[in-house]
Image 1 (cartoon, one colour):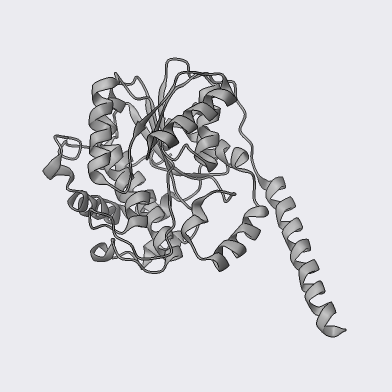
Image 2 (cartoon, rainbow, N blue to C red; image 1 turned 90 degrees about the horizontal axis):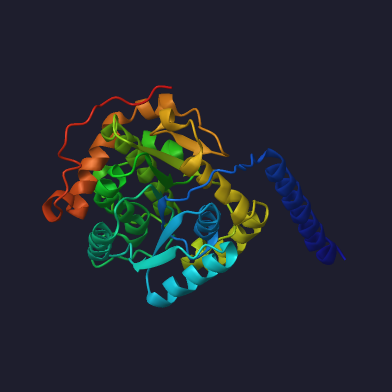
Length: 337
C-alpha cells in the first residue's frame, strides 16, 4: 500500500507546486501593449522560424514592419514567411539564407543585405541553441558559443553601416537571466571557446552577449543606434531539442509553469519599439523594464572591452572585413541614468 501511495503523493505535490508556480508567474508578469506602428521600418529577426522569435516577428509584422528573416534553408524560409503572412496579413516579409554556425555564411548574408537594403531600423538577435555535446563548427568554434555569441557578434558588427542609415536604429540582444554572477569569477578570456557542460556553456555564451551589449553601447555613444539586452523569461521553445531526454523532461515540466512564447515575446518587442528608453542604451531589461544592474556592470567595463577584443580575433573581424566600426574612436562613457 505504501509503495502505491508514496508515488501518488509525490505526483500530487509536483502538480500543486507547478500550479502555484504558474499562478505566481502569471501574476508577476508585466504585459506590454501599444499601438505603435512600424510602417516604413525594416526589421531583421533571427530565429524567427519558431518559438519566441516567431512571435516577435508576428508582432512586428502586425505593426506594418518590413520584415527580413534569416533562415538556414529555402524550405525553412518559405514556410516561415508563409506562416507570418497568414498570421498578420502583411505580405512584406522576406527571407535570406544565413547559418550562424558559419562565419562565411554570415558574411555572405551581410554582403547581400548591404546590396539590397537601403537601411536597417531594428536588429533583433534572438536565435540560440543549447547542445549537449562538445561540437565544433567549421570555423573551429564551439557550436553553442558560436550560434549564441560569436555569430551574432559578427552579424551585428557587419550590419552597423546599414543601421547607421536609419534615423533611429535599435539592436536587441536576447540573453538569459541565469548565472549572471559567473562574471565575477569564472570568465577566462583564454577559454571562451571551451565546452564545460551544456548548461554552463549555454549560460556563459549568453553572459558574453550581455557584456557585449555593454561594450557595444559604449562604442555607439553619440550615434543614432541604441542597444539593449533582454531576458524575456522562460517559455516553451525548441531550445532543448539537442539536450538529453532526462533534462528535457525536467525542463519541459518547468517550462509548463512559465508564460507562453507570445507573452514572453512582449519583453523583446518592448525593447524594440518602446519610446523613451534610449537613455538606457547598454542596459539589461527583464519583465518589460530596465534592471538595476548598473553598479555590477561598471565593475566589469575592462572585462567587456577585453571580451570584445578577443571576440574580434576569434571571428577575424578586422582581418576579413572592410569594417571601420571597431577602428573608430568612440567615447568610453556609459549611460548612468
